[in-house]
Image (cartoon, helix red, strand yellow):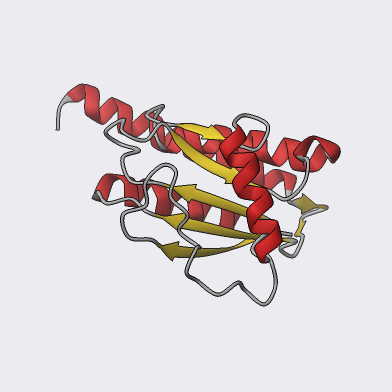
Length: 171
């Protein structure tokens, strides 16, 4: 491994640990961890080992924060604008957040990881703050190769979130 690659991986790991520490600190009150209040679905359409490992680290960081329960769903050939939940049964209880991670996030053929929430994320300060923190975590985990896009950033994300609310995937 080249020195610049080692340095990049070290910086990535340090940044990720700092992001996990910040999320964990938010989830603690007086030394006790708050039980998970949110349900997160991560839809993994990646095809490379590098992308999968980055996604595992991100999902683990969310889970370790203690703020959310994370479910990972694998999707075959998930392109940037594909609907991976189209032929699946909706869950018994809807999720609070869905992350759609398409193939191509490492090679630049996919420009975004979609963060989907029901309703207006700016209506509640906590949701907007969580999306901002999660977006920073995504950009750190994927070393700037992709951007985190939510319903206020892109019309596709807003329309897909509205569809998932109607189908029972999002709350």
